[in-house]
Length: 143
Image (cartoon, rainbow, N blue to C red; front, top):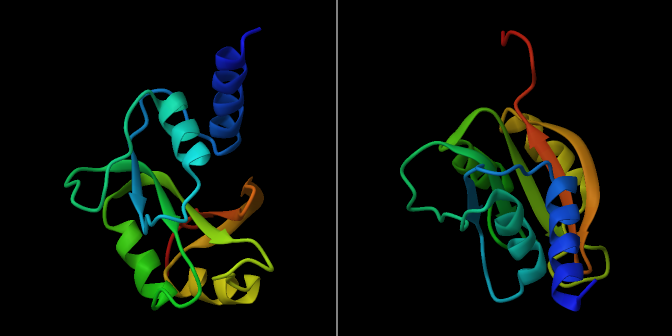
């Protein structure tokens, strides 16, 4: 297998770990120079579409929210990420791993998610310097 084919397969595997599927529309929020380009390419490879930004004015299937300690209020950012998210959609909160500049404590995510109406369902090492926390709206009737 060629190096290019190996890279494409690696992108498909990472994108699949994030639950991405062909045709999904994925919005990216919080992008900056420190974001992981391999992860971004992996999502685009699996979905077959470029990531859309905060100016996108239609419904999206998933949101990649890059977030660092010091970026502001996490609850507000999560609520903003919900604006374009379709029913059953997922937010991947991407934060720097422990020991990296901008690391966000798991307890901060654990407090912010329910306040924004979200539940953390899983987490993974999304990239060498980034952790991913999968957030969704809880299933069942709201009270």
